[in-house]
Length: 208
Image 1 (cartoon, rainbow, N blue to C red):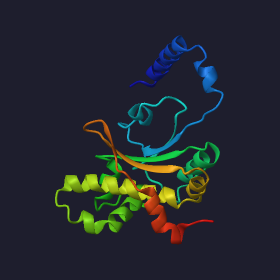
Image 2: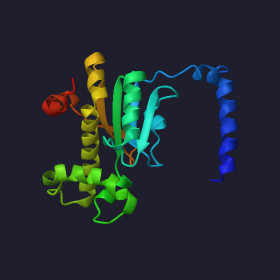
Image 3: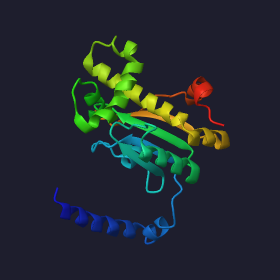
Image 4: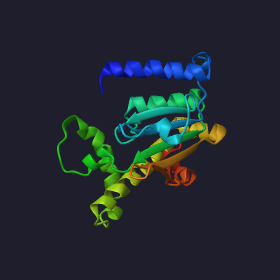
């Protein structure tokens, strides 16, 4: 696609929105009040708002390679802080997707340069769950299962944060772990029991 085409598309989009609602952009400029923080993968095939069927202002979106929530990533931590403490979202969604390039790369014994520190977070997920993963002989099924386990562990990382714990105490905010199936277009709810996880890690990660 030529870059200039994007600006042409933008003009058409503006005209379309104004034809539907003349106050569309005026109302949008007043602020945002999203209910959901969506943490997803940067994969160009996965579009958060379109996939969820939500409009502007309904979801606060953060994306990176393999939908990670490492505590050393100031970008992810700032997004969690801002969305939970200031925007007051009530749902945090971590959404991975099958056939994720980041997860696939982490499964390969290769030196990938600057990507190594980032992918190590996914390899740590493999290490934690290696007993289960090593029993899966089919590589495709193992790949998919690691995608699911990575979502689960990133939900745990959200729960570990002081911002989530405070928001949970204040208004019972919830965490959801989802996977997008690129082959079918369907969202799969992993049914993460975040309250059980919170109870299990409370001894170590509870912040007063």
